[in-house]
Amino acid sequence: MVGPKVSLIVPIYNVESYLTDCLDSLIRQDYENLEIILVDDGSTDSSLDIANRYGQNHPNIHVLTKPNGGLSDARNYGIDHSSGEYCCFVDSDDWVADQYVSAMVQALDDGCDMVVCDMEYVYDDGQTTFSSGGTFIGSSVTNDPELININNSACNKLIKTTIVKSFLFPKGKNYEDLATIPVWIALSHHINKVDQPLYFYRQRSGSIAHSANMKIFDIYDAIDRCMDYFKTHGLTTLIPIMQTNYIRHGLDLTTLRIKDFDDPTQIIPYFQYNMSRLNAAYPTWRKDPSIASYPFKKRLIFSLLACRHYGLVKRLYGKN
Image (cartoon, rainbow, N blue to C red):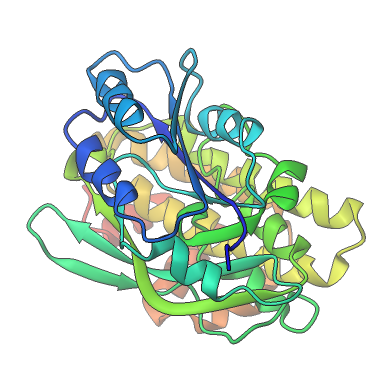
């Protein structure tokens, strides 16, 4: 029996050193009813040539080209040209297990809109770290609102295409997955889980930026986007859970990014601006119950930031 058609979408931009590993893993997929959509987003290296070579040799690979518009724009372009009942995503410097698609399709049952798998982070030195896609057995946000905050990567999920097309990625913004996946989860009537790492996420040392960049504050736009959707569509039970992302991503992770800036003179101004964004987005953040789960040092840092003692926080992180 032939399973549902799946569209596997791969945005490509200047990844000539990694693309072959990615595409080799895709042509090894053991699921037959599969279209692979490669979207070259204006690459200036040999990425498009590599993609075209695979497209010429494999009839289920379709190569699309477009001017550079960023990751979200490339994914959306692939979505617009997809014809599968379900979609999944692979970033072009990563790779997947041979059963990436088939294992998730096998986990589909009646009424299932999404399947999630686990991931592994793979580092330059060959070390790997397990990344859970969440701990749950077939559910939905109606029964388990906490599902909103499972791993927010688009790349470890098989999603009904009608859901994907109803809420596309935001163009020109960082944290596009956080801005999108919670809504897809909310729209899924039933979500199943494959307890197996099928996606291998390459952690490139050169891809971690330590320079001051205002794009890190797109994190607030991402959370706001989901919050606005939940408010507009009456999904009020999800709002308090989504608000915890202002703490986890806005307060905690953004503070950690800022304290690692190469230029220490930028740390305090960025701390200050981050707190202004947090206070504007979530004025009552200090009452968020999730704060109690953080270790003492983190809670101390949160309190110091709230009281504008940015220099003390900088020193606590060993930054002069």
